Image 1 (cartoon, rainbow, N blue to C red):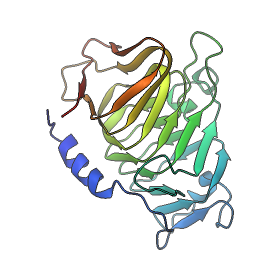
Image 2: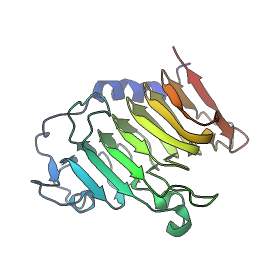
Image 3: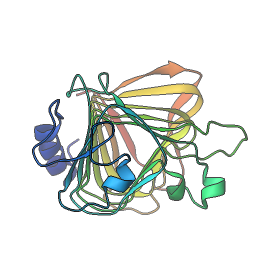
Length: 243
């Protein structure tokens, strides 16, 4: 099933789905040899909408609040997550942050953001039964995520608002680890890995709107006994297909 809006973004996304191995012209650089030591600091520099992160592990939360920003991570293989050399990590639970979104290691708060070849992790784990801890929170549409590795335990990916695509990426967790309320998301040729028993998706769709979660030609693997999804709200709608 092809969905209006999703089709447009999917087409754009596939054209842009390959990241870069070389540093993009005019990019603001982050890391060893770069202009800034952290992505959070670099994002305050608005002289370009393009950012490039050198190899390394960067600890701390990042909020992207400017539209049409593109962020590239250093990689040896731009068409997949397997060659990624950049990790953005934090260990913040929603219980201390004040909300699911506020716990995100990376928070997307503006439209038109594109992420390429980044590992994004929330390493809080699950020390208690309710351990919501988001790795990536997306609160705006026209979002693209290409060749990224997104890891957590409970509520790894909060795909919450607008039209979003995730392509040739990796997403892991085991409790409601792909969830949200008013987004249409298309997850294409991505590895979905369960790391324990639970639910992969928790769709919070609460009305008869046009939104879907679609998983197209994805590889679902892992450990534990897992369900493809559970209805977080009454109008939950998730499609898993292998066209």
